[in-house]
Length: 473
Image (cartoon, rainbow, N blue to C red; front, side, top):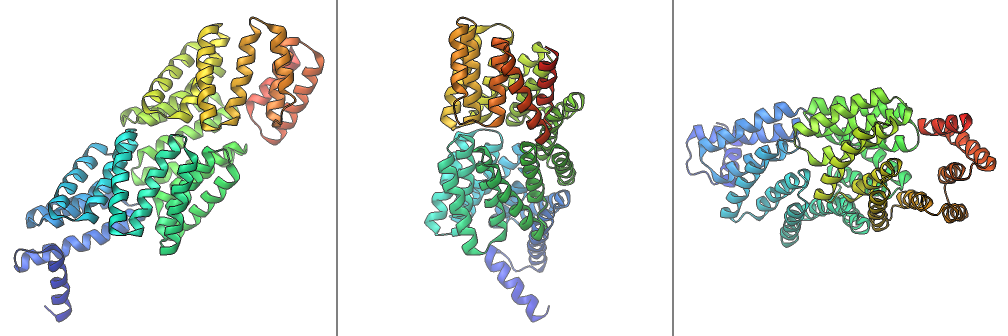
């Protein structure tokens, strides 16, 4: 053994407090340490199956050596990979074991990182209460240690929960602080995470231009690092913004790339979202048969993973699709599934949308009282979330419900809405509804003219369907 090898072994043994100086054990420790570094690189570039094989081998080696610190580190590494592969049960068990060892060793850094993985498992299984507890504990320990990098990561995790719960102010505060910390540390990996998180909040707020800038910056940094997981996330996010701009074909290309990378990674959650949003793009294009195919695939995977969050989102979209197809029985079935889980998980944004869309379906079915109740609940949530688009839609439905009893007052209220500061699509929708209430030619002309302009800009099939409906009436 040369001098450099000796000192390398000595440093490693000192770190893990080896109980013996036997050469075989030293070699096994070195092998484990090298495997850790190799696994980190393979995980970053997306070779997750190879990473898992290496990390599982490490756990066995660490148990053979019987060194607690090494066992905890190896279990943590494997757990941190497995939650990303949606293997939540094993990820939680391994991170729990690691935390218990770190607690015995009074290793605060180890404790907080193990708690972080436990928080991710809770978060992705939609147990926000327990996830929030984990992330707050993680933040407290990081602040006690004065570890800026870990403070930032804990803030990012907390921000994600605030965003999901509709508290955009707190979410932006957490993510912006995380970005600032990451820039100060010149930590590109953390910068990309912060950019993605900020983009999510801006998107949730309806600020699509700001969201797109964040996602494009994220993609650039992720590509520089070769981080396939973040690349797939950036591609998915850019594709979603493309849907909102009416660039459906471009969006589908992004989702196809996301699916390919997610399949390479074994990231089935990524596949769920890519298939789901591809279904939305196809729905807006008017390719309903293909849309059903993508939604069905996404829902099947979500059910296999017991991903309540995934099931909620896909089921709500399937409700929308079957409503368009006038299959009211199936539409209501999927809305019920989405609303039940949305309430259970407190996914306010998804719940708000699904409540309103089901209320609209119930009005079509002439179930007025039920429609009013759900629409009122959707309106309350929309106001809480500052979702101006859904507030507007709820107000229209509220007026249509009123029209069932007092048509004259409903027409006046809808006319008064035309005086508001509205988007073109909202003005077109008001003229369309007023046409149905009054039958007046002026509303038909105004609605058709506006929908023609909208369709020329964004080829949303629903605009074309309304134009055809009004022309044939």
